[in-house]
Image 1 (spheres, helix red, strand yellow):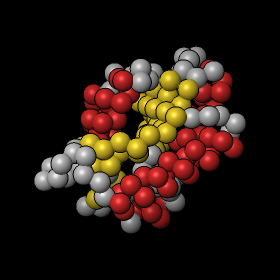
Image 2 (cartoon, helix red, strand yellow; image 1 turned 120 degrees about the vertical axis):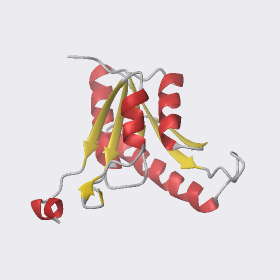
Image 3 (cartoon, helix red, strand yellow; image 1 turned 45 degrees about the vertical axis):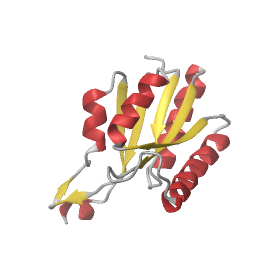
Image 4 (cartoon, one colour; image 1 turned 60 degrees about the horizontal axis):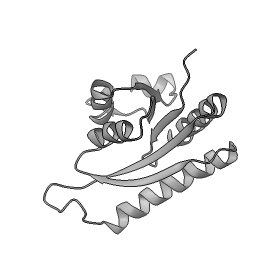
Amino acid sequence: MATYTRILVPVKGNSTDKEAVALACSIAKRDKGQVFIIYVIEVKRALPLDAESDEAVLRGDEALEAAEQVASKAGLSVTAELLQAREVGPAIVDEAVQRKADLIILGTPYKKKFGEFDTGKTIPYVLRYSQCQVWVMREAVTPEVITK
């Protein structure tokens, strides 16, 4: 069984964050590792990269705080950081390289686009360009949701 000592968990403030953080904490405790939690604020190209949106910062802070509470309940201290970038996928991959992560855990809700399950653009980007292992956790859904 592989060991994971540096785990990166990007959060978005959605329903899968808590499970992704709990899984990362469980693995980190087993392997005596560290968990890094990030929230990436996507800044539009028309704005300077350091432009701040109070609303986006508030959402990010709330998501990070909720993630830290999950880690605290698991008995683990984590490093949480709010980042700003032009695109989320490259920011996650770059952060994983900077932190020498050996695992990225991405949580995703079940979303449909044009009647089909859709992972958006961030997950495929991270899967394609990450230098470390990537685990994707999709939330459980009922058969009725899948067939709609």
